[in-house]
Image (cartoon, rainbow, N blue to C red; front, side):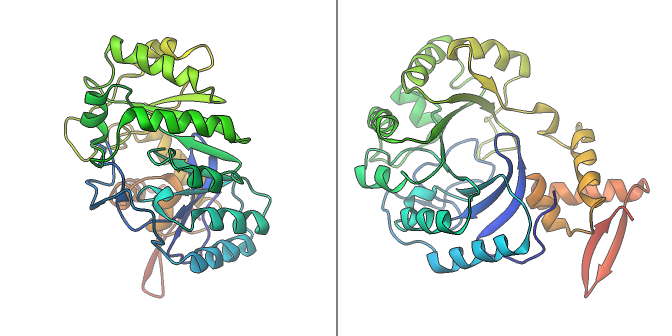
Length: 313
């Protein structure tokens, strides 16, 4: 399912997501405006670390873009407030969720680090969402500071308390993500505490992930798949591993990504930027794979109005 051909400023995708299927991303904050500065973030270091909620991007323009996307006929499994920072920092988030729900029956999901869930007003704003996907990477203060590098005002105990209250109030589904970094939050002691806390929050799903691409710090290393499978036991029988290590580093094993790209290009010509948005790759990663496919004669390069497009036809 290729992305829309419209040029949007705040929407991206639909992106092929292992967790959400085809997810249209809605970027509700400026680039790297976040409450955390996680060592594994593939977007790099946080440029504005803050806990102040305020109108960060024009809500009306986002809603206009969503309406335009819906009119385009491109399908999506979820409309996801996520993007290049922490979406709950946008004070207009609740209003945007409500307005999007008026426009479509496509489920609305929220990708969040849950750091602001102690705010009862925010928890109320999220009520209309269908699915919330919070993250919880540590439960001990030292490891929390080491892996997530939070705003000084944030404490892990308060964050966990906010998650507990949110679970009590929220009628939709909660899929809790735990992202594991080798040598940092994968000790048996931390895993036992993480598992107990995760289960006590009663999410519908507990999803284990690891570093997908080079992060903000070089020492943010992924766990091997066999280790993730072993670690799953700490989180109960319903926990699932969502990391797909075959696709993390396309230069080493690009087969699955290549076939995904070819399937997309078999439908219609698409630009490099659209391929990147649809597959979740960075532009430079997408261009590298596309060039390799071109060199092997599997795809063609087309030009239209000074823009490059890729095609299988």
